[in-house]
Length: 314
Image (cartoon, rainbow, N blue to C red; front, top):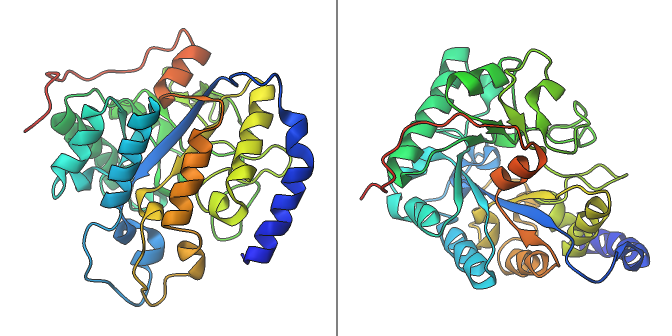
């Protein structure tokens, strides 16, 4: 998307955003979650013709995010690709040390629909066990790469020890990406998505812009700008819905040019994205964990928990 298009969209938001201010006070809770994956783990990089010899692209962004949240007294949930715990245990462990909720984003960040049922089961099980071993936290939450889930998804979550999922988004269909399958906008039992889902698994959907039905963060934040996201957050808050947002640490750093990686991946990354995240965090919301939003919305929900010793691996 061009800068001109972005400014055009921004002017539309300018025309209506003043009317969304409810009282000038706090708007309630919001989740600005982190999908902890690196640049070379993205589908766009994996399918590109070129490569880069740079390692750990995104770790600096993760450190920036951790420090920025700390400075604002904000909390979050980190959906972590657990293979990162092997080469970068300190970077992942520091997220738990900061008091953030640790959740799973699979073991390898492969699309679940492209794997066999046994491999999907292994991705979920091994990721949870590795993250619990490293951090000493009980890992109850899960988010699938690219919101890509299969018919057995909720059954596998329950089987492998998870209590909630955040892999559903009520987005309009986006050709080549995702969307069009769901309309759930608030926390619910997974049976709201799949009547055959285990009753003790909850679903926390990622948020979309009301009416427009495009995601509020990820690529869409970089396309439309932070006022787009802030407006969507306030519109949701007026409906009593806690916004659920997501960003990636690699979006917060300068990226190397790699042949075959689409230009949209590079658009408004680095410093621009860091300033956008700061703008979001300065909105009148209380930034909390994904699990706390589910607990507040579903008071009778009791997640499965695995025994951990309560000490982070050193």
